[in-house]
Length: 528
Image (cartoon, rainbow, N blue to C red; front, side, top):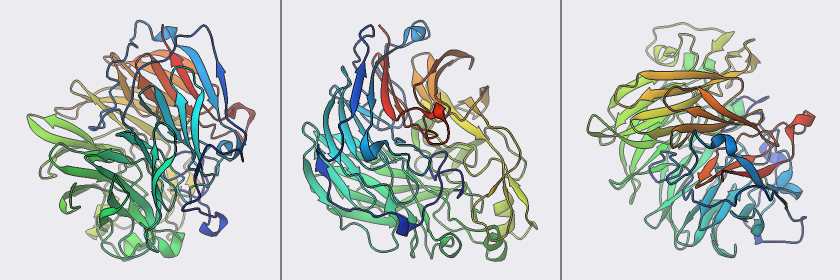
């Protein structure tokens, strides 16, 4: 993460000293009168939205396929804005330049569930855009920020503040339980969108500053009781002295497998270039896919993509369940700009493919570990510390879809734990399609801004959004952009596609810098 520009998870954010933010572990309440109510605008000439997106990434396999959608290349041009749910009060504040919204909407039983970066949860009618209830927290995330977000299962909505987890009644927003006893000093803070399956809530902290770094965990979905914890660092967090924050953990939704496992993609150790040179170490289990027994949290296998990382090259993307050559597999990736296929039983690498722009120094962290290279600043990182792959990938019909950010950055000192200067290259990104069988790139399409909507497969389309506030659709066969729609605000959150609707969380990350940022809002577009 870079202090001046980006968030851990999203664009246009900076680090904020822990003392600058007052965190609330509890004190959340259903719809309160202390803040003005959100406002909904509706448009009579648009079709009513209907459908579902029941999990953060569409399904438990994290494929991001919009099952049952009626949107296709033939009618995507007919998308019209059906409603816009505009945030107010603290929830609409521009959080450190990241905007108000960074989570994936979840759509279940005719309701859109959404959490903002002040941890407030909203239940919005899918058909009308009207607020059904609000669980008000009004406490900003402490570090990342975000993405935050909720999961919905068995009539409950599960989420977290920075220091507590909670479950709400999905119909009323009333708390079923709140657990603020999960974290000890140095274990980091919550900022992820959890997953719920089989009576367990899976979540993780980020930025653990004590021995053990961040913490992966499972809770009892019925009462919030802790079932197990797994530390993502086997020793002290190397970034603490230089950065003031710690290492490891996860912030994207994990993969719950059908084989009794759960797999998390983990973050980097926040190690400086100087530390990587003078004290090289693998720093397990950072920058890794970590596959655990879902019931016990016991390690089954791990695959570390970047040992001894000093580039902030997280392997953070939500893992995807797949089959490669008849073998159960997991597809992973992250800010190092590589897509990986791994054997789901052993973690053995099946293939690896770089996407986006690389400058030929991908293996420098490993070469330092093996004492085979000498480095000194200024040192250019490409992919930069923000990607590579920042948003989640999609998988359908033998093809993996990935979005990349092309923005090289420069490490200017041995003490820096993040890149801190531009490398003088313009802003751009790409959407790429890869063969699931071989990893071979099938097509790559340049886009004018950062694609952050998370690649989403909608019949014969791949749909996403750009940071600058555009909804785009690409032909799945060719990669050609066949649709583009200007949004009412800039966005850095994943989209949901429910039936005939595209749900966009447009959090307006740049609203304080220019007039073009717009107001933070959740918007539904529908086809007839």
